[in-house]
Length: 96
Image 1 (cartoon, one colour):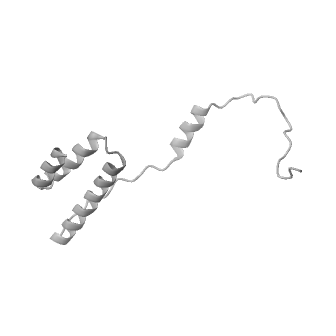
Image 2 (image 1 turned 90 degrees about the horizontal axis):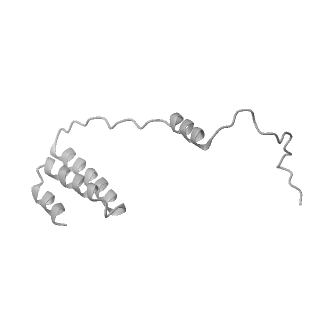
Image 3 (image 1 turned 120 degrees about the horizontal axis):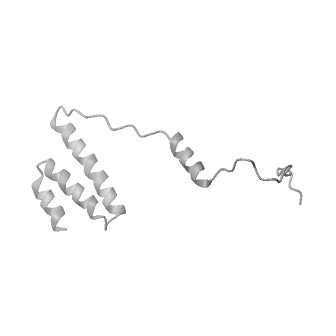
């Protein structure tokens, strides 16, 4: 079995400047693109409001489904429901 794709190592001496794993990870994090913040939405009618609330609820429920024991996720969801004046839903979050 020949290894045609693998080349021979020419110099086996250590490099003059050593790079640590921490440096590699730091550089990789610096080069990653930062996520752009969500644009502020202006809701014009009830249908858009209903769609917005449905999307937000779905996102919260997905987070809770993945991490059921994360109390902070439940509290954020309940606070969001309270900010939407959906107090029966908010109370249900605190009861669960």
